[in-house]
Image (cartoon, rainbow, N blue to C red):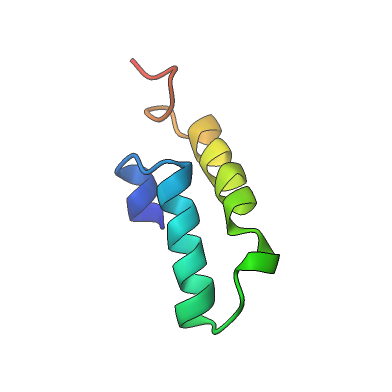
Length: 58
């Protein structure tokens, strides 16, 4: 996921990644675990702590 974030992945891509990992890697039902909500938090955090990420980047 780190590489995806560094490459500029957004909420949709991170959400899909988390959903696949939960289901395929861990064998969990991703629906109740809200991967989309987690993706929003992950991307927000990444953009707030990475100087070259997000809309404020120059």
